[in-house]
Length: 275
Image (cartoon, rainbow, N blue to C red):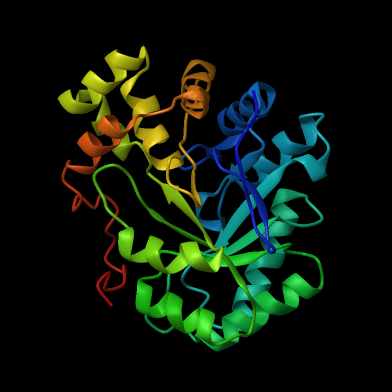
């Protein structure tokens, strides 16, 4: 299987990755090892997930060269300044037992975020080779614009909730011409796509599953990556099947007509998404 890759001057990311939230411990390690064995090369974790040690152990046990794997981690929002951000990331690297990560993200913007200070920490980590690329997650458009305009460190990625029921076109319109990859989390809408009659119809037409249709919808957008979580090898293999699925114009139009305002991840500390 040939995995599609997003390639820019800043990063080279396999467009279908493997999300690890909320897996823990030995079960997480086994799932990541299985995913890598099936062909996944992009693994996503975070400080907050509490599974970095398991993810790192899986990478080290996989037998795949580190340079052939793409590893993302994220520092939690309670590190709002450069000093605490760097300290937290250094602890991430120790738990991961890796010499570097391919992508380091700010997980959520803190209400007290000192943006320039955090960007300066990311710039230093990138210059030192500890993070090959850096970016942000869960930033609304206004804050993303500020991060880019600061010109402290080049932003390689924006990771946000994005699926067939949540339109992120405002963000896509901004990131796509700037070669910033948009990584979609919750890409199958927490399984809601499986019961959707429109998606079921498209799946039946192609001999596919609703999950594969939902993922193929995202992968049809240039500059978009997706990181579904799947614990069982069967589900991991199912998700991989989305890579080969080609939706036609009628399929894409039907999917585009579905509701696009269904946000599923809305913690109390979330930013104003319209900002």
